[in-house]
Image (cartoon, rainbow, N blue to C red; front, side):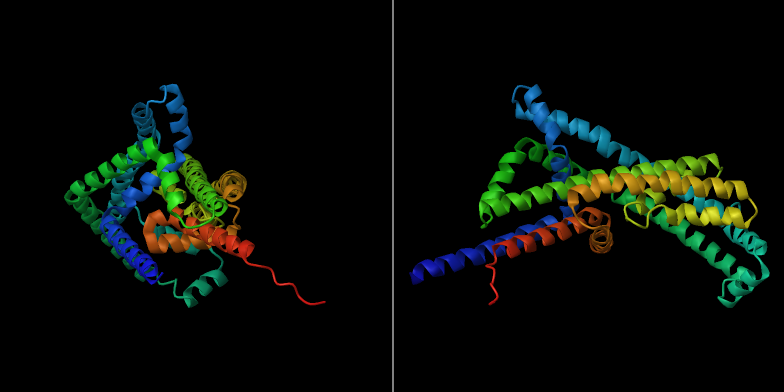
Length: 354
């Protein structure tokens, strides 16, 4: 009996040690492996359809699904990223050279305000426009330098990017091909009752699909709609603002209003009332409608988490894990809720005396 207990403890220590070592060696490419898992879960239904279409030939089905994934999910992100860097560099250069005088726009808007509002801004320290102009110029110079540095770093880190991208595609192919079998092996190794393991796996899959598909669809839609209205109104660098609105749309209850709201206020403050009214109406009725209608349907329905928890877990996840956190944060929160729900359901209930 003692020998058996000792063997079990030794096996537990061995499992812990090799697991920590395995996670440690995967850390440099955790993003590639993580997104391979996420994309494999999202495209699993397509993989099953491809498997039927290709007569159960797993390699052909996985290869076809991988090509579709590459075409509709990966290449557009790369193209938009390249265009964004170019557009952002151009915007910062225009600010630095003085062709785009943001401080001048702020000064013009301040002069359009009533006297009491201008005095209030002065008391808050916002009225020092010379200092504000200097800060904006300094920020523009830092932004231009940062973009130039990032462009140079990207050139130096091209090999690392290609390696990470290749690892993601390679792992994704095998996850698509052997996904059900891998999931079954992992489920068998988890020391929990089958019903509890099934609930956790379903929750994991639902949250990944809802968070990625739902949040990304909402973000892309809001960013595209915002970019269109900015382009129509003649606002410079509409692509940069569109991507920024899409990024902020990942945060529920905050969203793209942080971008189009101040622009609409500026239009009204500077006497361009029609532009301000059009942008405000468009932002509330069109961009805001996407967040209020699509997000609960695509995200909240499948995650079954309140909006405040999605917001906090998204912000916390992005603070810890970077951009990957908009998936990892809600996923951890959902598994936390599910795990405690399972624990509560298995805990014996205590009957109070009458």
